[in-house]
Length: 162
Ligand code: HEM
Image (cartoon, rainbow, N blue to C red):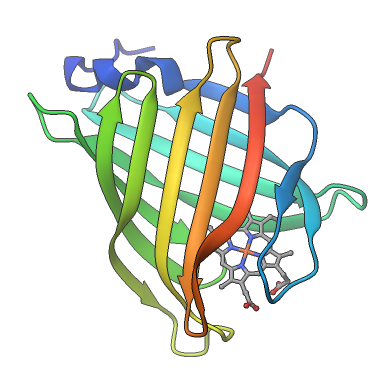
């Protein structure tokens, strides 16, 4: 196991595997509210880059649903962070933002999708991670689509996986 690259020290609290702590809640004005579970993996190989995988499942049937993977980079000497993301829905995205203590605030910097992606298309994503004082990690995602302004889509809490 390589040592964490010093450029990533502001994100040390994020590393490892996280399991949803009770089901996450999905919503949007145009869809039926739903519940899901999710596992997050954050790892590294000594480069100043985090590798991540997010795998979501239907809370009741346990069927695989949404999946994202990619890389996290920080601009050295700053608190600026970038997530480089591929989603199984056919979306690729760069989100950028800031690490402030044990919180990351991100928003879409660039976005592209496969030509036959399902509509409505997402146009903007706002995402926040926060490590709470009780040791649990929280993720909130809001999005704007072709026909809806920025509205919450996801909220979920994770505990460290043993
Ligand atoms: C629906 C985007 C993550 C489950 C949608 C829609 C969009 C979208 C654009 C269609 C909304 C509409 O019809 O007006 C995204 C983006 C995500 C994300 C950009 C990540 C950043 C997730 C995750 C789950 C999930 C983690 C967990 C299982 C669903 C479900 C629906 C939905 C169940 C409604 C049915 C459907 O359209 O498939 N999402 N989503 N999404 N999303 Fe997400």
